[in-house]
Amino acid sequence: MADRRIFMEVIKVEDFLLNPPQGFVVNRHSGHTLVKFDPNSCCVFIDEFNMDNGKIIFQFSPGRKFVVDNLGDYTKMRKKITSQRIYLLASASDKLPSWGGELTETPEESEYFIVALNGSHPLVRWQIEQGLDQTISSVAGESYSVEIDLSQALHGWVERRKNVLPSVLKGKSWGICSFTLKYHSDALFDFPFWFGLSKRNFKINYRY
Image (cartoon, rainbow, N blue to C red; front, top):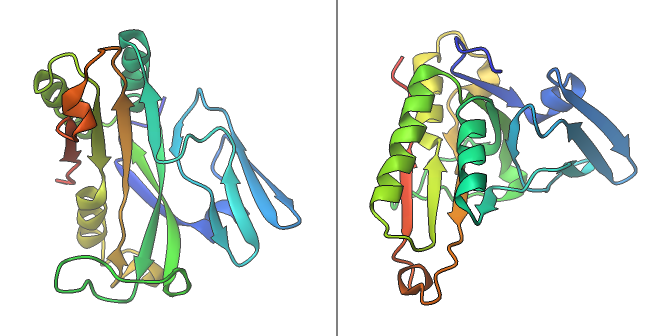
């Protein structure tokens, strides 16, 4: 179980690999780094990505998306993300967002950070459960996908702690920080899903 008192942590990838949190083991190989962890103890939603020393791979991570196809698996995953720590990859740049709000950057201009969100924190758990409940109530048995967006929580966390944060975290424009749950129904004619009408999203906010 995650420590319910901790809302969020942001760790530079290099620091995460050099001094991995409890439960993570880092094995460096020629051309890639393999990060091992117990998938039953935390939720890691990180795609493979490249850094100067090669590819970084989180073993057993489904990437930013995970798929369930029955109510039992959905219930297990829901319980998992609301009781454990959730790890995501976020990019940060010194560039300001463009007029449309999109952050235009190249990998060479970005720094990568591991964001650890405490799914068992009362505020986080409540927001995830509310968002999932609203999604389910808005669809009628068909497949759906729901994006759980941590970008507002990340911005709020950085803003409220800017006076005590290390300089490496200050003044950054942060990239997308989210993961997606996809539920695949066995409905034969799942037109809403096919036409993209069953896509939902909700944001986790930081209020402390």
